[in-house]
Amino acid sequence: MTSYGDSWIHLGRNQVLADRADKSMPTKQDVRRAARLLAMSLGAAGMGEQGKRYEAWLMLEVALAFRNRGHQATWITCHVGGPPRKALFRGSPGSMKKCGVTVDAPGYIQLINNGRHYELHNSIQFRGVSGALHEVDLSIIPARVGNGLRAAGGGYPDGKPCVALELKRFKLTGSFSIGLMRAMLLAAVDLSLELYPSAPKTSFDIAHISPTGVFACGELRESAWIAVTTVANIGASQRLAARYGASVEATFQVDIRQVAGTNTRVGILVDQLLQYL
Image 1 (cartoon, rainbow, N blue to C red):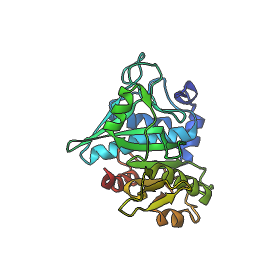
Image 2: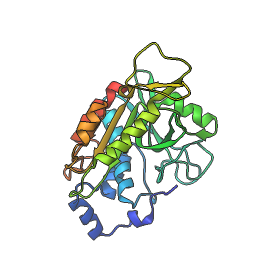
Image 3: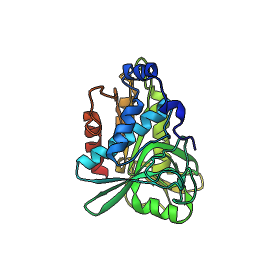
Image 4: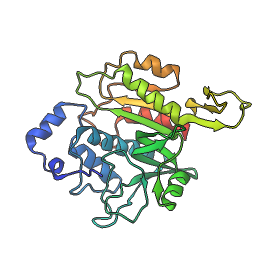
């Protein structure tokens, strides 16, 4: 795992100002403030790689937006050793880790509302019907799935999450190409398909019959598939996404006036996600 390093925590004033001038880039203070509202401390652990810092910031802000809407949002620590309230994020795609075993096991956020229990994770890989693994930058899964995997010693969730957010942080002059959306949708299809021994009696969004007669069918629209990007230029990606029940949230940036937990765009995003939980 790649943890937040001193290279980020000890950023000089010039680097902090450069980050703030680029509104797509959360500063260390942005992430720290959000973590504190969840009673967590980043301490000497942080992320220097810009895309991962954006991922950590949005994960925490999403949790705070859920809390503002009546959910319990609690950071669950899984590592052993070091401060118990230190937030560790995945620095690269990986599996679900068993808690209380290793010093680098990443944590997650527990979401509870009206007796329904979910988990918010970053950079978990999910196994599709093909057997391939697909990273989901931010995902929400039922707590029973996470509990089952951890009880079994860890592993990869099979199939689709309830919520899948693909995060793309670019310089403001960049673009979210249609190729990125094609890749996201292909992963969504592989995660949404299920195998049937015979022709199912109901209709599905997507269906495939192999040369050997195996039926693979699934529903894309049962989950939220959303690409979140910092740039305005998304080309034809939104048109392609909408055809298959996905979407693109463009110009998703840090507001320099924001107070942690009050980002308007994050709140609107979470309002969309609630229908899938």
